[in-house]
Length: 322
Image (cartoon, rainbow, N blue to C red):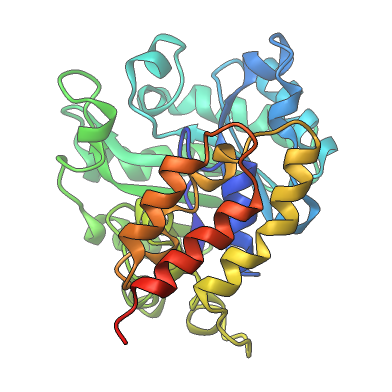
């Protein structure tokens, strides 16, 4: 099981929080473009805490040589996997000729993957859609997988929706195109030797376990893991990975973030950069809205620090029925 790469969400602070709830789920960075790393001086985007392992770097790009340079930088930084984004449908990504538009160019994707594999020892994987626009997904997806797999790439994460490159926003592309889980299952039948994971619309551990029991090799969960992190991630080690570990209470998770917060503040960071990822920690629980309110109102204030976490927990406790 893994937590999806999500722009503006799965930064290093978010990943550290998620790691406190699951030791085994693979965590992904936000997408980082190869030009930003190679030419734009964005090496700070590669920073991560050692506790985040296993952690994967997702790259966006379409120039094989440039992607190879970016992949090498990621591997040297210590990432456990390098993933190529062939699924993002945003206009900004399309204009850079990467993301979902590359579903139309499997040969180029194969060239990119081969170039990346040639310079790193860690796995190079691909996250893709089942197709784009009016493509026949039943025809296009197996051809795409076969072409890219011919490079030796054996791990694919398939978002079980098409991407519509015109007419739908990135947000709409996550909801409106219908899910086709059956097609993903068919790909496992066609390519039994490949490690295939499904992504899209998975919101619970039970749903994830169902896909694994049906024969898929992995499940990637996105927005649900962000908005309800404790519900989705805290039980993953036991339910999905069979680990004999106790589930940590969300209060314990909040308190466990304090040393990390202290270190971030000491290095010049701001509290809200971390607490924005903690808003959903008590989602669906008594006092959850109060928790969010205290954090959202106080985290951006000058001098805000760990005391705000304690205050939010205390307010929640005070609001509990006697």
